[in-house]
Length: 404
Image (cartoon, rainbow, N blue to C red; front, side, top):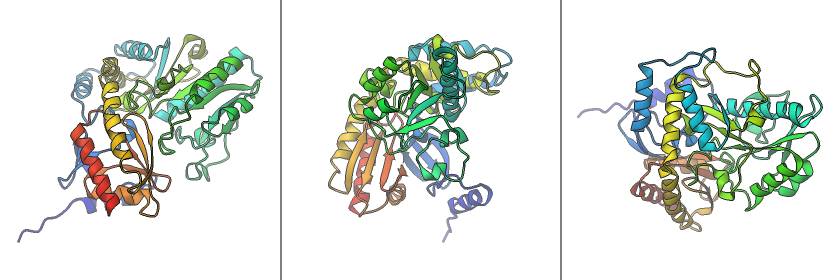
């Protein structure tokens, strides 16, 4: 009898031995991927319903994105921002036009983009609004997730993200998410910006009450305050529109973008705003060696072209309706509540049955990858290339998990 030797246990042990703890991954070791599916080191296939926290909106190894990366790899990959390269202007112009803004500033990670937005908002407050030096305030929402730098965790309300990383950066005022009266009460002459996610992803795909974002826009206009939309997870087609904030017909002063902007190939992030906002930065005041590098711009430009057709936004809206209908049918059958838009859902599992972690482990055993958050909630965010059959398969596996 032939003995089959599985590679997964050893690979997991090696990862545990040589890496510090920052995530608590599921016991899956991915070796290959294509579209909405991944294959582990032992040849087992899984349907990816996390999509790299929306970084893989276009699926694994999208042919157009891979071709753009390959072509650029044969030419030039890095110049630093000390020079201009031939992919830079095309990417920035395409993204600016997609956002309806004058200017774009490329960076690498989502956290860098948020840090950039914070710096720009503060400088705008001092140079344009006339706030006294060192007094600028930015209003943020409870249960936010904007990244993990020391400045960003300073205004996190998640103890795991924040504890033991002080002293904390001042200048932020936290209000309850979705509470327009609280935003209104928090605004002072020193307020330079309101920074929020149009849908809170890490918190469990929380959608604000109808009219909240439009109300924030009105308050910002009335009080000469910048409205900054962190669309790192919610943007670029995820919710059935290019940006989640479009569901309320709202245009922010600044978009913060990342994740899907790199096509799942390279880290690419950016902020987009008009000249009167981003124009406050002068040479030498902010930068990044890798930000806007040729490889990133080549891939990012192709991402913009894919979004410009509207195909992926339409797929997300159409297939998202199918996903949410299937999830809502499970309410009362092990599911307590469902939230979200497009191909993005937060699913509250009955805590009497299992935790979110246990649900994800059992889904993985049945060949579907998802991610838990905050106790009994799981997040579902398949690539926008997912098929109807894939969706139905995943829903059937979730139903089977809930039935025990």
